[in-house]
Length: 382
Image 1 (spheres, rainbow, N blue to C red):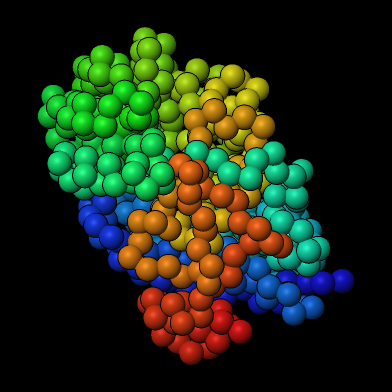
Image 2 (cartoon, rainbow, N blue to C red):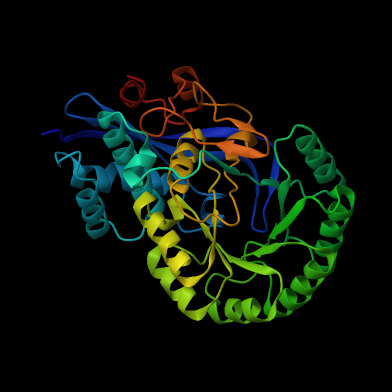
């Protein structure tokens, strides 16, 4: 019987190609935790946990993810049967409360290892892929209208993206609407425009904002209100013609069920890390489908490791009405994969090969590691 032999984790810090302006922070680098699981037969698995903006976004940071994996999750899983991923999930959920991203990172590595041992793509462990690629939105988040317009036009010309999500919420509502209007007019009606408010609006702001966005032809507003304001989200969903999407309010199947019962969203931004792992993210998609709520493959701005795993999972989802925003590897100034994920024809393509279908570049891994301990570096690169 193959068992879990060792779980290692390390933080990587990679600069972004430009400032990524959110309502709560401006990111100039992304820090994420790579997880490497070694099994008793010599096989391995890769996983990743990332948090957008660290503790300014949610209740997990790269440092807390690393600690949870290394000090709490690894000791409770070492020696367990490697192929029983469901058993490992239940063990983690019992031993470690919360820490959705940390648990997701380890679970991802377990699924990757299982798929690699069987010589299968990870998607096959979830019933098989129904698509090999999916539409991919790009986030415009420089905070400057002219800069965003120039960036978008270059990406359209390169046939890389024709759907754009604008980060707003740092200014007053009227200025935000003016910003979106300028971009909408510059790009034309054939381009998809969505916005992400990251919980920054009050209900009063949201009424004005959604009305203005409807008028200029935007498609969707992501998490306009606080994640805790389910009643407000339900009110906006019922009263707005523009689609309302839940993101920060959605942490796994329990939240999905509660939001679906209140009809507090038209769309779910399903994120593997925020859901607590691949299995729970798949359950969120099933709840959305049963409730008639649209699904959207979201990102925590993961590197190619987490992005590849997400692509395999969302390739198995029957309905992905709103496409994806699994663009994050393109936001970084450097690539840590030996072979990058392919973006072309306004889509992102699911990697081929066993497991999640990607391999790390060991030199890049060594360069961007925050922790220089040689023992951990040896574990992650050998």
